Length: 135
Image 1 (tube, rainbow, N blue to C red):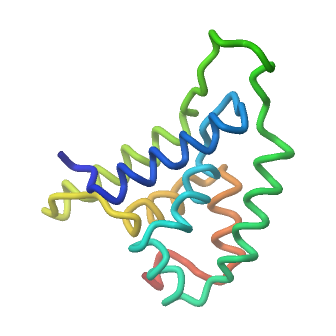
Image 2: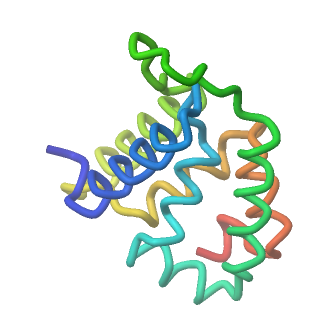
């Protein structure tokens, strides 16, 4: 399997958080928010000097303002992964395969987010004065 234990746990955390708040979509921003609790991703962010608390606040604010909610009491509708979320995971897996590694980590996911040009998550990472070239 190409997703490491930490990435499986991170994706599960992102999905659980989105479901708990009745978010209609699981976005790249949900993933980045969950990556702030991923050991490997946290280490990378510390090493590039990112303001993790500021990043967390900005992500939470963006998610709350922009993510549609599933109506209360609607037991039929499930939280859906956005295409951007799927692209980031796929891009991370492809990066791992091409580098000959066995498992995708939080670091791979961070790099993959940078390539999701139209996402607020990539923008917020760039605002942290961190860039994929520093990693």
